[in-house]
Length: 323
Image (cartoon, rainbow, N blue to C red; front, side, top):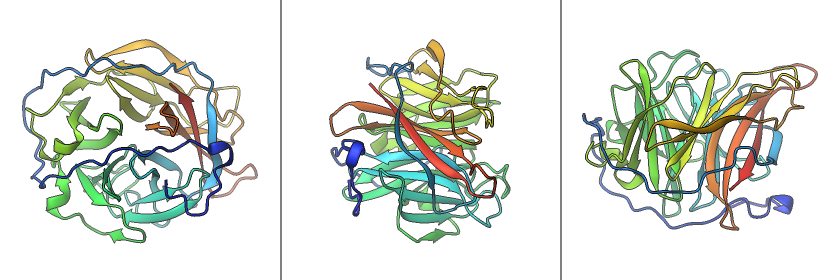
């Protein structure tokens, strides 16, 4: 990864390069009707009970007074991006940070009126990173959620007040976000349909067309009586992240659940994670997969925290489990 002058130390092997993804012509991105019947091939599954490792944190991001939300990895160019609300924004204004393996901010860009940022996805095109992020929030408040996906090139310092129609997909959606399987080059779209959330998977190279004939999976997300905080997937398994902010380290409710995307059913029991249990106001935020330099897969998940003495600052923290 382009670490600028970051020392790798114990974080050696966190990021790994891969093969570039080809680019096709952009389409309208209108979600097509129908349900694809293709299944994802067998794949290994993370042991959610494995001992977590600490990557970084507590660290301030570019917007010091807003919690981290979703994050994503560009495995080709070995980059990490974390999204958060904008300081002084109206609630649905998002800032995407490019972050080093030690948590230092290397760059940022803003998208106004985008949504909440529960999840974002990175797509590598040569040395360029495109970010799939919600846009056109249904209201420009803290409750605003995206009604379309945008595919935008990450450019440091750029402020996008609007997204061109040629870069928007799945328009007319309800609470839409995206995640990426960077190894198998697939994009997952999560959105509400008829009152329930559904997870759909497309090949990353054709996701922008939104054709049902290209769709590999379309399953209903099981309802869970916990606060949803993010999702990711690798192979045929999705990993769903739940929990709320807590000030008492003995009252841990952060859980990760594994979903078989071919059956739409949970596999195994929900795993409670005690990673970061000593953090002040520890709130689960964001989850993503990434292939390490060693070739092993990592399941990364985040927590937002606050300063011990109080105050407006909000910190980012990342932990991971190895496959």
